[in-house]
Length: 418
Image 1 (tube, rainbow, N blue to C red):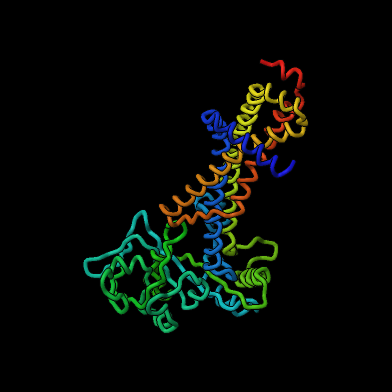
Image 2: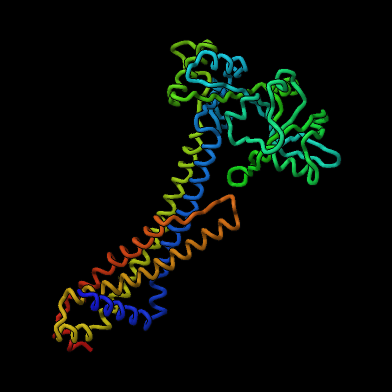
């Protein structure tokens, strides 16, 4: 088929669709729904995947976390042998650092989070903040977690830790609430009634999906935390690796050191857990797996409905244009010419639906990103190409049978058709 013939067939296809606007519109609706779903959901997931990867990097890509129980677990549902594990100690971190060549440093931190029966409060004058995370940290903590970068002032120092000083580093949201119009550095605040000096403010971080982030954190020296809240025994250890050692090597050394320090028998399981920031990625992949499956089902149903609609309208078109097919064959049109004409009409129909679906999907992604900045939906060119390819494939697959049926009609029967 020459270029002129292709343009002529395309013109005929468009004229046919314009002549039956309502029927054509209803036919491509399924394809629009299917492609829109694919583009919109894929854009949202792509944006969130990028957010998760960036979050993992900022948490410390070369950092391991040692905990007494597995992270993100319901303690009440854990087996008794896990619930009765010994608490981690600051001496454990020191032993890891001394006995593991792959470890650059190991730092301990602890949390006080009471959102249900909230008792913590930071107050400055008449302003106060209640919903926040209070964390006891050591000076090396900021090196283990690049996410906790200080924008103003400084972080907890070795001198602060050594003397259990009443100093505090606060998140941006806390600073804005307590000090809306003054510089927070050096100001005295009351943490649960006790005076602390603000020595630093963290860089802004709203958190993942606009949940609690660094903005809602307040950090004090670990020694001060231990003195102020002796009832909190849970400790966490962040372990950073040296250059030249793999994460697996460091993990093996940390595990071996802790087993020795905690006197775990050689035939017994570890009484601690070691995880890397990648567990966030793994958890996210599990969550998005179900979303991708659901999206595939919805878009598949939409495309199936749209494809059946394309086949139906093309079969009707073949019946309505039987006489035209007979005339074309009588003047020399080949089977391939008839087949290509009807295939091109089917593909044009589905492509229009695909283009509309891509535009609507992109519009939805833009609206989501505008309304919810924490969900950075991103329309990837890959998904645009894929959406267009899917629409072409639907037209080709579901249009082939009507096109072949038209091509195989007997010209004499066609000319007698009324």
